[in-house]
Image (tube, rainbow, N blue to C red):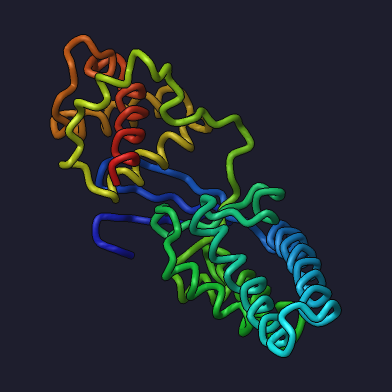
Length: 256
């Protein structure tokens, strides 16, 4: 457990309390949904491998280096595929997106390259001796439903909310362009941005009282550290905490 975070696990849920006062409950994925997700991704990977074999070996594209190109393609399909989607697509491969799952860090932050690479390199160990027996056993016996790759990469697989998620920063761009350009968000860290994003993604699953309280807590701590907010901007009003958080996430992400 890292400093500033307290976690408690209750069956298939993990509750995270961040230093910013945001409490997030992550419903954890079980063996069944993870198996379906893996099966979908594996099917896609097999099809991509078959296509690469046809091109580089069957059609002889690349001549004498065709087999080498095919070997590189296999590595890309079975390793780069997972890492790329997890890092660039919000922790979701096509299989995870279809089944409503996502990979995140155990603290709730988005998964990064190193963590994703570690969890996917150990996939071979989780697969042993066959059909993910080691991985399935690990998921069943660990509190946070983690396979060995998750334990090594400090990641968990969570179930995404089925409720509609509002798009961060989905506001009219024309009248806001000038105001947002004047915001100074240099005092906001990447970790704080991740916390704001987590709240914005999960807010529709929170009860109204908890939602407004969390928005107020975050806004009160972060608003004084953002410069250039016009007095005419609704985001500067304490009654519009979520508007402030939406625009903060939008501006900070654009300047990272």
